[in-house]
Image 1 (cartoon, one colour):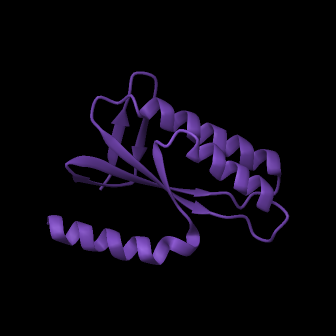
Image 2: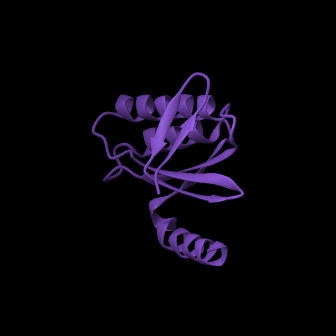
Length: 114
């Protein structure tokens, strides 16, 4: 279900969320961009949003499902983008190649809580 995280300096509606004691929210972030600078800017924008949303009154766990760039030409920029997003330790990052395992674990968790 959708859930809006509201903090003093920012708010964001996550299209995918479920509550298990705290809200778990999910956002897909594609870094399949042409310019390395665009990758860095996107990572910084979402890192800033993450930091602001961490001040929400209602505790929230943020999960980012990452889409990597096609090809190797932006591999270094993508690595730095992940470092930026990881720097605050406020969000969990899930890589594309982990998506299957993540989806199965999430489905099990949701079924157990229902």
